Image (cartoon, rainbow, N blue to C red; front, side, top):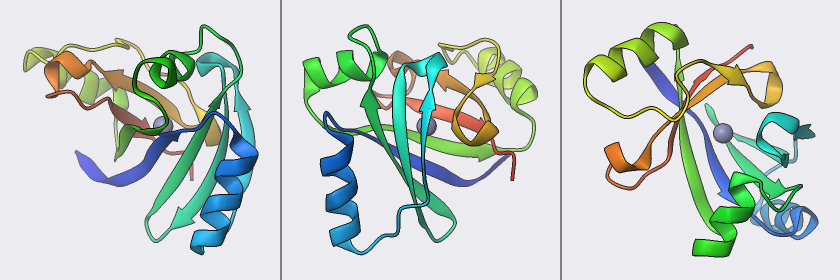
Length: 133
Ligand code: ZN
């Protein structure tokens, strides 16, 4: 079951500039973390039940680097919080939705995450996320 929007992932080429903008916008920086599995450095800004997640690529072959190269900076993915990630992935696959990750992998904040393929989601990169907090 989907509980709420966990976070909105925004690709930036310069994390410091991104942080400065969202602070100016009025959000408060919560944490900065490197996520080796996705080759990104992320900054989190809580906003109600959800967060803004700024993603700066740490390598040229990072999926976020490829995204910026193709589409420029901007909204890269939407993450929905779920209770049981393996069960959700199995259900989505049964429903004919293409999965990028058949198994959960480690994300930021100690969460387990998995992505659905944008080919199956009308162009939106959707992340399912089992939050640790
Ligand atoms: Zn995310």
